[in-house]
Image 1: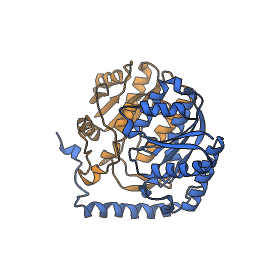
Image 2 (image 1 turned 30 degrees about the horizontal axis):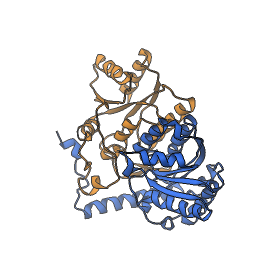
Image 3 (image 1 turned 60 degrees about the vertical axis):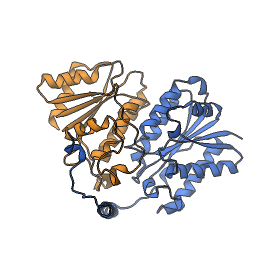
Image 4 (image 1 turned 90 degrees about the vertical axis):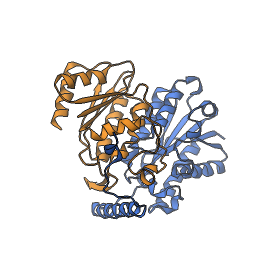
Length: 179
Length: 218
């Protein structure tokens, strides 16, 4: 199962990709972050000591994180915002440790966190470059690379314009199939 | 004398980010500047007070924790909100401080890039930042509790000095404060920390092998 979480803005990159997966008969789920509320992680420690492995705050995370943990592949679609994820996507991502192993490992001679519980974290990001400077694209790709390092993940980062070209869509689907 | 606004973008008002900003405030007050610390999270639903403070400031120092390689989501929302009010952005100087658990600067540096990109697009002058690793182990305690505290405090003071002089702080300032240890030490650290995590969970009656509640829920 592929789960696409999209902050689309005025564009349709996530939904186009979702349709692409379905057309190739790859099970996929599409979550638009329009009208979704994930409250901020306030580092309260509740997901450790009160409800182990679950956020103590009741919001749309209650149905989103079960989908994410059950997915084989997670794909974020986000407008690149000052070289980073958008606020809406980052609210989801800030709580990703809910589905991650808490333990430490050493990889490439450095400490990293344990990655996704039960399986490898397979993670793709599609950044919408509208209104972006070149440096922002570089910053975004560097951020994604660091995300893979810290989560022991595998995946790729793509930069798209207002819409997804057919070529890029097929390329992403092929890469997702490979991981 | 400059009007310096110290912005705590951590959700915790008495955590490590606040400790760092308090040190910065003490240092800059002694240099004769006006310094005020404002916390972002109590103002999340109404940013008017914060916008007014930004407008009045000559220099902004933004400090927060690293959540998955950059500042938390609400820092991005704050920057977007400020970008919509260009009238309050008038070439103020902006410095960033980001602190996270991992000891390596590269893990946290994307947070500083976020600020730099914001500055480039929004008529604010980015003057550099400071990355502090191992911040999570402090949990609001003084910096003296860090294993590399002497070096860290010295380098922080050098960084604060750049803020005092309104000069660009090079990344070298924080890079020299980082701990450099051979990888086998990290292996020992990982084993020790994992044991500590498991022991802590067990002492709270938590079964560390239990399934994620998100796999159990409908």
